[in-house]
Length: 378
Ligand code: SAH
Ligand code: SF4
Image (cartoon, rainbow, N blue to C red; front, side, top):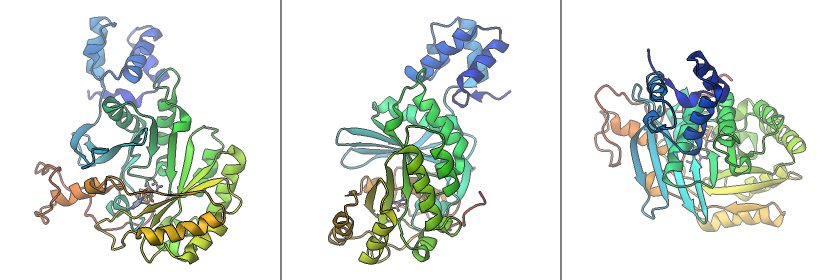
């Protein structure tokens, strides 16, 4: 019988598994504390348990579902990126650890690939591969937390968290569990492409977690092109969902805006954005585009970015112009896995990314890069 990933169980499920072996429920709590508070990865280290129980655990469960396929640190040493995968499949998952200012932020994935098809995004160019389980989402945090104690967690890696809603929320609950990892909900941010029904649903969950919405354009004609899900949830629908979120939660929303030269960085878009967010408790994050293989757009130069920003500032809209980080290690969303897929593809033997080992012959590329997919049915 194949072993179950332990991290996919919640505490009542673990208690039920142990009860079936005739073990008292306090044993489940001992294991829970060891895994989530001490970061134990091997049942042999659970010396507080009887040997027979350690052996039973070892036979029934895996403590880690993912292995490291590759990792790389940026030249300034502040950004490290891991490419993780299960040994029985080719799908790849990215996790990034960023050390800036006094923050140590884990950027984690919720899906392998993504079905939303945003044209400028490396993950979108890859297409949807599969949803991650709650355990796989949590495991990324446990792994990064082994390297460095974390101050912040962002669900901003590969995938659309609200397209894998239940697992993403279960992972957040696991991370904030007072009996488990005890991570502060206010230091967790979920980023969504703008799935309006799920924004409404999330508002009603009353979690203390922050929400970021990836806007990138403030007119439907442009957003339809950059973020195809806008065709289903156009800007006015999205705005209504955001207003409902604000009214229910009273929590500040963040809007993400990747500045793309000559595409969405003109004063017309800045003015439209200012109109769109008027009256909202929000912060706008402006981020120069990270270049990707499948999209010809370029990052806005600093002077033009400052001009865009000044339109918002003049209208008292809180904003930040971010610097691009980890660019030398393809730390943009989905970029390392895309590079890996390309590197693994026999047709592209000359890819320069040295960190990615060539895949074993059985490992096919996830999906040819540069083939944007349409949004899947939700
Ligand atoms: N699917 C979610 C979360 C993952 S993407 C979302 O779209 O919000 C995380 C962030 O990276 C999003 O704001 C996304 O728009 C942004 N992003 C994706 N590709 C990018 C690129 N090439 N340059 C800059 N930002 C990018
Ligand atoms: Fe998916 Fe987010 Fe990338 Fe869009 S930006 S394709 S939603 S991961």
